[in-house]
Length: 80
Image 1 (cartoon, rainbow, N blue to C red):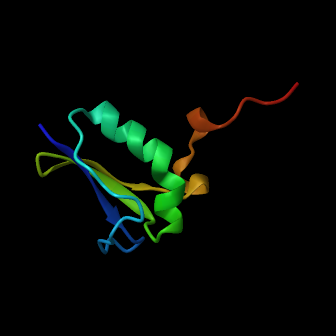
Image 2 (image 1 turned 90 degrees about the vertical axis):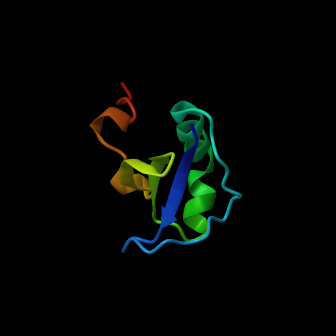
């Protein structure tokens, strides 16, 4: 199985990634990679990503903009 990302503008138009994209052997590897590279991808012109497994959409689009991507579970703990 091959896991790949599609890189898109906010309107869904596909864009070339700023970081060399690759195929991944597991979903976890693909998700870890985008978690490490999202800032460079965003700075390079991608607004969102969609994950595919062997050409079949798994989920997405997922925003690369932190304020849109972060949900309550992603919020930092409150400082005491």
